[in-house]
Length: 317
Image (cartoon, rainbow, N blue to C red; front, side, top):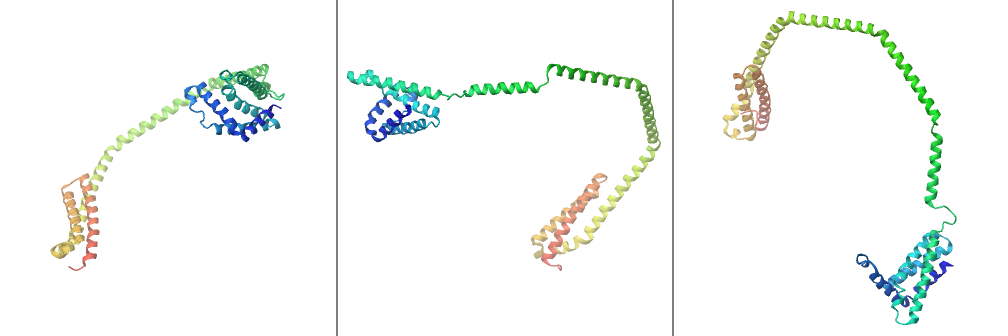
Protein backbone atom coordinates (compact mmCIF):
# COMPACT_ATOMS: atom_id res chain seq x y z
CA UNK A 1 0.00 0.00 0.00
CA UNK A 2 2.80 2.43 0.83
CA UNK A 3 4.71 1.51 -2.32
CA UNK A 4 1.68 2.02 -4.61
CA UNK A 5 1.87 5.84 -4.29
CA UNK A 6 5.50 6.00 -5.40
CA UNK A 7 5.07 3.45 -8.22
CA UNK A 8 2.07 5.33 -9.64
CA UNK A 9 3.75 8.74 -9.25
CA UNK A 10 6.88 7.46 -11.01
CA UNK A 11 4.91 5.93 -13.90
CA UNK A 12 2.87 9.13 -14.34
CA UNK A 13 6.03 11.26 -14.39
CA UNK A 14 7.66 9.04 -16.99
CA UNK A 15 4.55 9.18 -19.21
CA UNK A 16 3.99 12.92 -18.80
CA UNK A 17 7.44 14.28 -18.09
CA UNK A 18 6.69 17.70 -19.57
CA UNK A 19 3.90 18.27 -17.03
CA UNK A 20 6.37 17.78 -14.15
CA UNK A 21 9.36 19.68 -15.58
CA UNK A 22 8.22 23.05 -14.17
CA UNK A 23 7.67 21.55 -10.73
CA UNK A 24 11.11 19.89 -10.83
CA UNK A 25 12.72 23.11 -12.01
CA UNK A 26 11.18 25.03 -9.08
CA UNK A 27 12.42 22.32 -6.72
CA UNK A 28 15.98 22.55 -8.08
CA UNK A 29 15.92 26.36 -7.86
CA UNK A 30 14.79 26.29 -4.23
CA UNK A 31 17.38 23.65 -3.41
CA UNK A 32 20.13 25.93 -4.75
CA UNK A 33 18.89 28.67 -2.44
CA UNK A 34 18.55 26.40 0.61
CA UNK A 35 21.87 24.55 0.24
CA UNK A 36 25.23 26.19 1.12
CA UNK A 37 27.10 27.76 -1.76
CA UNK A 38 29.71 24.97 -1.82
CA UNK A 39 27.00 22.33 -2.37
CA UNK A 40 24.59 24.35 -4.53
CA UNK A 41 26.89 23.97 -7.55
CA UNK A 42 26.29 20.19 -7.49
CA UNK A 43 22.55 20.58 -8.14
CA UNK A 44 21.82 19.50 -11.79
CA UNK A 45 20.67 22.07 -14.36
CA UNK A 46 18.52 19.75 -16.52
CA UNK A 47 15.05 19.50 -14.87
CA UNK A 48 13.72 17.02 -17.45
CA UNK A 49 16.57 14.59 -16.84
CA UNK A 50 16.16 14.95 -13.07
CA UNK A 51 12.43 14.28 -13.36
CA UNK A 52 13.00 11.08 -15.31
CA UNK A 53 15.75 9.92 -12.94
CA UNK A 54 13.59 10.45 -9.83
CA UNK A 55 10.62 8.79 -11.52
CA UNK A 56 12.60 5.75 -12.57
CA UNK A 57 14.07 5.42 -9.08
CA UNK A 58 10.61 5.58 -7.52
CA UNK A 59 9.25 2.91 -9.84
CA UNK A 60 12.14 0.55 -9.19
CA UNK A 61 12.39 1.02 -5.41
CA UNK A 62 8.60 1.07 -5.03
CA UNK A 63 8.28 -2.22 -6.91
CA UNK A 64 10.91 -3.87 -4.70
CA UNK A 65 9.15 -2.56 -1.59
CA UNK A 66 5.79 -3.90 -2.82
CA UNK A 67 7.34 -7.33 -3.48
CA UNK A 68 9.08 -7.39 -0.10
CA UNK A 69 12.56 -7.50 -1.66
CA UNK A 70 15.11 -5.54 0.41
CA UNK A 71 12.29 -3.52 2.04
CA UNK A 72 14.53 -1.47 4.33
CA UNK A 73 16.88 -0.45 1.50
CA UNK A 74 13.96 0.30 -0.83
CA UNK A 75 12.27 2.46 1.80
CA UNK A 76 15.51 4.38 2.39
CA UNK A 77 15.85 5.05 -1.37
CA UNK A 78 12.26 6.27 -1.63
CA UNK A 79 12.84 8.53 1.36
CA UNK A 80 15.83 9.98 -0.47
CA UNK A 81 13.68 10.84 -3.48
CA UNK A 82 10.97 12.37 -1.29
CA UNK A 83 13.15 14.59 0.87
CA UNK A 84 14.20 17.04 -1.93
CA UNK A 85 10.57 17.45 -2.97
CA UNK A 86 9.59 18.08 0.64
CA UNK A 87 12.23 20.79 0.97
CA UNK A 88 11.95 22.47 -2.41
CA UNK A 89 8.62 21.76 -4.08
CA UNK A 90 6.09 22.49 -1.37
CA UNK A 91 6.77 26.13 -0.55
CA UNK A 92 3.06 26.87 -0.27
CA UNK A 93 3.61 30.17 1.52
CA UNK A 94 4.89 31.72 -1.68
CA UNK A 95 1.77 30.80 -3.72
CA UNK A 96 -0.27 33.60 -5.26
CA UNK A 97 -3.81 32.33 -4.51
CA UNK A 98 -5.41 30.80 -1.47
CA UNK A 99 -6.24 27.67 -3.46
CA UNK A 100 -2.62 27.12 -4.40
CA UNK A 101 -1.59 27.67 -0.80
CA UNK A 102 -4.08 25.04 0.40
CA UNK A 103 -2.94 22.56 -2.25
CA UNK A 104 0.70 23.18 -1.37
CA UNK A 105 0.00 22.76 2.34
CA UNK A 106 -1.84 19.47 1.72
CA UNK A 107 1.04 18.21 -0.47
CA UNK A 108 3.53 19.11 2.23
CA UNK A 109 1.56 17.26 4.91
CA UNK A 110 1.11 14.26 2.60
CA UNK A 111 4.81 14.09 1.74
CA UNK A 112 5.68 14.46 5.42
CA UNK A 113 3.40 11.55 6.33
CA UNK A 114 4.83 9.42 3.53
CA UNK A 115 8.36 10.28 4.60
CA UNK A 116 7.56 9.25 8.18
CA UNK A 117 6.12 5.96 6.95
CA UNK A 118 9.24 5.34 4.90
CA UNK A 119 11.45 6.04 7.94
CA UNK A 120 9.41 3.54 9.96
CA UNK A 121 9.76 0.96 7.18
CA UNK A 122 13.49 1.56 6.92
CA UNK A 123 13.82 0.83 10.66
CA UNK A 124 11.57 -2.24 10.63
CA UNK A 125 13.56 -5.37 11.52
CA UNK A 126 10.63 -7.76 10.96
CA UNK A 127 10.95 -9.05 14.51
CA UNK A 128 14.67 -9.74 14.16
CA UNK A 129 17.17 -8.20 16.57
CA UNK A 130 19.41 -5.45 15.25
CA UNK A 131 22.96 -6.14 14.14
CA UNK A 132 24.39 -4.30 17.13
CA UNK A 133 22.28 -6.39 19.54
CA UNK A 134 23.31 -9.63 17.81
CA UNK A 135 26.96 -8.60 17.83
CA UNK A 136 26.77 -7.79 21.55
CA UNK A 137 25.17 -11.14 22.36
CA UNK A 138 27.71 -13.01 20.23
CA UNK A 139 30.50 -11.27 22.17
CA UNK A 140 28.92 -12.26 25.47
CA UNK A 141 28.60 -15.91 24.38
CA UNK A 142 32.23 -15.97 23.20
CA UNK A 143 33.41 -14.46 26.50
CA UNK A 144 31.53 -17.13 28.46
CA UNK A 145 33.10 -19.91 26.38
CA UNK A 146 36.58 -18.48 26.89
CA UNK A 147 36.05 -18.18 30.63
CA UNK A 148 34.76 -21.76 30.75
CA UNK A 149 37.85 -23.00 28.91
CA UNK A 150 40.25 -21.21 31.28
CA UNK A 151 41.27 -22.93 34.53
CA UNK A 152 39.48 -21.92 37.70
CA UNK A 153 41.15 -20.08 40.53
CA UNK A 154 41.60 -23.24 42.60
CA UNK A 155 43.11 -25.10 39.63
CA UNK A 156 45.49 -22.22 38.97
CA UNK A 157 46.55 -22.14 42.62
CA UNK A 158 47.11 -25.90 42.55
CA UNK A 159 49.32 -25.67 39.47
CA UNK A 160 51.24 -22.75 40.98
CA UNK A 161 51.91 -24.65 44.22
CA UNK A 162 53.01 -27.72 42.27
CA UNK A 163 55.41 -25.70 40.12
CA UNK A 164 56.80 -23.94 43.19
CA UNK A 165 57.46 -27.27 44.93
CA UNK A 166 59.24 -28.59 41.80
CA UNK A 167 61.50 -25.54 41.59
CA UNK A 168 62.38 -25.73 45.29
CA UNK A 169 63.18 -29.44 45.07
CA UNK A 170 65.33 -28.95 41.95
CA UNK A 171 67.18 -26.04 43.54
CA UNK A 172 67.96 -28.10 46.63
CA UNK A 173 69.31 -30.96 44.50
CA UNK A 174 71.57 -28.68 42.48
CA UNK A 175 72.88 -26.95 45.61
CA UNK A 176 73.60 -30.26 47.32
CA UNK A 177 75.40 -31.60 44.23
CA UNK A 178 77.60 -28.50 44.02
CA UNK A 179 78.48 -28.65 47.71
CA UNK A 180 79.42 -32.34 47.44
CA UNK A 181 81.73 -31.92 44.42
CA UNK A 182 83.17 -28.42 44.69
CA UNK A 183 86.37 -29.67 46.42
CA UNK A 184 86.99 -32.21 43.63
CA UNK A 185 86.41 -29.52 41.00
CA UNK A 186 88.90 -27.20 42.72
CA UNK A 187 91.57 -29.91 42.80
CA UNK A 188 90.96 -30.75 39.13
CA UNK A 189 91.24 -27.07 38.22
CA UNK A 190 94.54 -26.74 40.06
CA UNK A 191 95.94 -29.81 38.28
CA UNK A 192 94.92 -28.37 34.91
CA UNK A 193 96.63 -25.06 35.74
CA UNK A 194 99.86 -26.85 36.76
CA UNK A 195 99.79 -28.95 33.58
CA UNK A 196 99.24 -25.90 31.39
CA UNK A 197 102.04 -24.03 33.16
CA UNK A 198 104.45 -26.93 32.59
CA UNK A 199 103.53 -26.96 28.87
CA UNK A 200 104.27 -23.24 28.66
CA UNK A 201 107.62 -23.66 30.41
CA UNK A 202 108.59 -26.51 28.06
CA UNK A 203 107.64 -24.44 25.01
CA UNK A 204 109.64 -21.44 26.27
CA UNK A 205 112.70 -23.64 26.91
CA UNK A 206 112.40 -25.21 23.46
CA UNK A 207 112.31 -21.78 21.82
CA UNK A 208 115.30 -20.56 23.84
CA UNK A 209 117.31 -23.64 22.94
CA UNK A 210 116.62 -23.49 19.19
CA UNK A 211 116.25 -19.80 18.34
CA UNK A 212 119.91 -19.45 17.34
CA UNK A 213 119.65 -22.37 14.94
CA UNK A 214 116.43 -20.95 13.48
CA UNK A 215 118.06 -17.57 12.94
CA UNK A 216 121.01 -19.14 11.08
CA UNK A 217 118.63 -21.26 9.01
CA UNK A 218 116.58 -18.19 8.17
CA UNK A 219 119.64 -16.26 7.06
CA UNK A 220 120.66 -19.12 4.82
CA UNK A 221 117.17 -19.37 3.34
CA UNK A 222 117.18 -15.63 2.57
CA UNK A 223 120.56 -15.92 0.89
CA UNK A 224 119.32 -18.84 -1.21
CA UNK A 225 116.24 -16.91 -2.27
CA UNK A 226 118.39 -13.92 -3.23
CA UNK A 227 120.78 -16.07 -5.26
CA UNK A 228 117.89 -17.88 -6.95
CA UNK A 229 116.24 -14.62 -7.90
CA UNK A 230 119.51 -13.28 -9.28
CA UNK A 231 120.05 -16.46 -11.32
CA UNK A 232 116.48 -16.25 -12.59
CA UNK A 233 117.03 -12.65 -13.66
CA UNK A 234 120.22 -13.56 -15.48
CA UNK A 235 118.46 -16.43 -17.23
CA UNK A 236 115.64 -14.15 -18.35
CA UNK A 237 118.11 -11.57 -19.63
CA UNK A 238 120.01 -14.26 -21.49
CA UNK A 239 116.79 -15.40 -23.13
CA UNK A 240 116.07 -11.85 -24.22
CA UNK A 241 119.55 -11.36 -25.69
CA UNK A 242 119.73 -14.76 -27.41
CA UNK A 243 116.30 -15.00 -29.07
CA UNK A 244 113.92 -12.08 -29.28
CA UNK A 245 116.52 -9.46 -30.04
CA UNK A 246 117.91 -11.19 -33.17
CA UNK A 247 114.81 -11.11 -35.31
CA UNK A 248 113.69 -7.71 -34.01
CA UNK A 249 117.11 -6.13 -34.81
CA UNK A 250 116.97 -7.49 -38.33
CA UNK A 251 113.42 -6.19 -38.77
CA UNK A 252 114.36 -2.74 -37.53
CA UNK A 253 117.25 -2.58 -40.04
CA UNK A 254 114.75 -3.08 -42.87
CA UNK A 255 113.12 0.36 -43.23
CA UNK A 256 110.09 -0.94 -45.12
CA UNK A 257 109.35 -3.67 -42.60
CA UNK A 258 110.14 -1.42 -39.61
CA UNK A 259 107.24 0.81 -40.61
CA UNK A 260 104.72 -1.99 -40.09
CA UNK A 261 102.46 -1.52 -37.05
CA UNK A 262 103.12 -5.03 -35.73
CA UNK A 263 106.88 -4.46 -35.87
CA UNK A 264 106.53 -1.13 -34.09
CA UNK A 265 104.44 -2.76 -31.33
CA UNK A 266 106.95 -5.56 -30.96
CA UNK A 267 109.81 -3.07 -30.79
CA UNK A 268 108.06 -1.03 -28.07
CA UNK A 269 107.31 -4.17 -26.05
CA UNK A 270 110.92 -5.36 -26.30
CA UNK A 271 112.24 -1.96 -25.19
CA UNK A 272 109.89 -2.13 -22.21
CA UNK A 273 111.23 -5.59 -21.30
CA UNK A 274 114.85 -4.39 -21.71
CA UNK A 275 114.13 -1.45 -19.42
CA UNK A 276 112.78 -3.83 -16.75
CA UNK A 277 115.92 -5.99 -17.07
CA UNK A 278 118.10 -2.93 -16.47
CA UNK A 279 116.04 -2.06 -13.41
CA UNK A 280 116.53 -5.62 -12.13
CA UNK A 281 120.30 -5.36 -12.60
CA UNK A 282 120.39 -2.35 -10.30
CA UNK A 283 117.94 -3.77 -7.73
CA UNK A 284 118.55 -6.04 -4.74
CA UNK A 285 116.52 -7.95 -2.15
CA UNK A 286 112.76 -7.73 -2.53
CA UNK A 287 113.05 -5.11 -5.29
CA UNK A 288 115.19 -7.53 -7.32
CA UNK A 289 112.49 -10.18 -7.18
CA UNK A 290 109.84 -7.61 -8.15
CA UNK A 291 111.74 -6.37 -11.23
CA UNK A 292 112.63 -9.90 -12.28
CA UNK A 293 108.93 -10.75 -12.31
CA UNK A 294 108.17 -7.62 -14.30
CA UNK A 295 110.99 -8.39 -16.77
CA UNK A 296 109.62 -11.90 -17.27
CA UNK A 297 106.09 -10.58 -17.77
CA UNK A 298 107.15 -7.85 -20.21
CA UNK A 299 109.37 -10.30 -22.12
CA UNK A 300 106.48 -12.74 -22.55
CA UNK A 301 104.38 -9.92 -23.94
CA UNK A 302 107.23 -8.90 -26.28
CA UNK A 303 107.66 -12.51 -27.43
CA UNK A 304 103.98 -12.73 -28.36
CA UNK A 305 104.14 -9.49 -30.33
CA UNK A 306 107.38 -10.53 -32.07
CA UNK A 307 105.80 -13.87 -33.01
CA UNK A 308 102.81 -12.01 -34.40
CA UNK A 309 105.10 -9.71 -36.38
CA UNK A 310 107.06 -12.68 -37.78
CA UNK A 311 103.85 -14.36 -38.85
CA UNK A 312 102.60 -11.20 -40.54
CA UNK A 313 105.70 -9.83 -42.34
CA UNK A 314 107.55 -13.07 -42.98
CA UNK A 315 110.15 -15.16 -41.22
CA UNK A 316 113.02 -14.12 -43.49
CA UNK A 317 114.29 -10.59 -43.38
